[in-house]
Image (cartoon, helix red, strand yellow):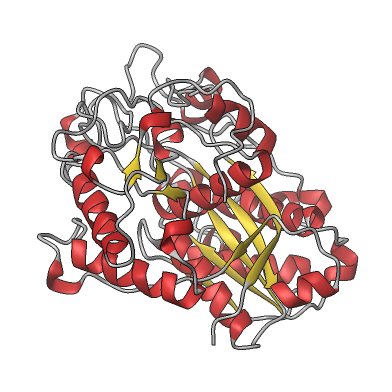
Length: 401
């Protein structure tokens, strides 16, 4: 039986936003966080000043790390990739945000599930030392968090490409539901060490990267997805336990589901209507909700001309099984502001949803002007009417049921 799971702690590092307050302001203002590579990043990577590089949703200060706080030597810190360093910082911040001291949280039966993909930092380090190996092996990221924070639950590093962080959240919930753990600390970080030149035609080998570096989700001018950096962590706990312990509750995960398209999609990197329907309906059924009460849908919304219509069609067919109402759920996509974070795209979307609940607002979709011609919004359950203009920052009292 599925149990409600509470989100009791959060930490985030997103383009132009290191906390929920900054993220809220950026999204209200329709801020485009995709930008040129900074002077600092150029100097770190020894990039040429006169070269036009692909614009990306960058996070800054990836070179800094308070190694003494974690009792890590300077030598070991030097060879730890940015993903390991920042994930360790965010993991600690998430526990503190939940109201627990790191000392009191030691030895807790807390699962640590980190989503991670390959990084290029070891190539830059130019060393084949043991600390360079452990500092760049993605499978050790979760283990390092457990080691330095002294957490005793299971740990794993999960790589399922763009689905990684949502799958990590699902697995974290499952461990709590099965009573394997008392907490689940879930999240990850994506950083782009290799930055392609904008004129380089090889960076878009899969044909999904937007020419201008922007994800124009559900828009007629969509040409692909933009690229972003960042991520975040959330601390999960069974709702009944969180209420008993008087934890601060950011939100509740009422249902989750995971599957694979298998051979139902047209290609390995394409979505399928049937696969999406299967997962969404299973999650709704586990949550025991009435889909008519859904007011917000945070979509994948990559900004690909064909992928977006497939996603909307899948959502529409899900709603058709339960209701005849139209235009009652508002569609959102955080990628339009910060780009596609790859393995951590899902955790960024969850944190955006939490910001919505915290501030009682509906965020507009950045760059949305005219609907993708393959999507007929006026005929379905989804609504983009609020996404075409800049919100005034006032709470939308009718946004939530």
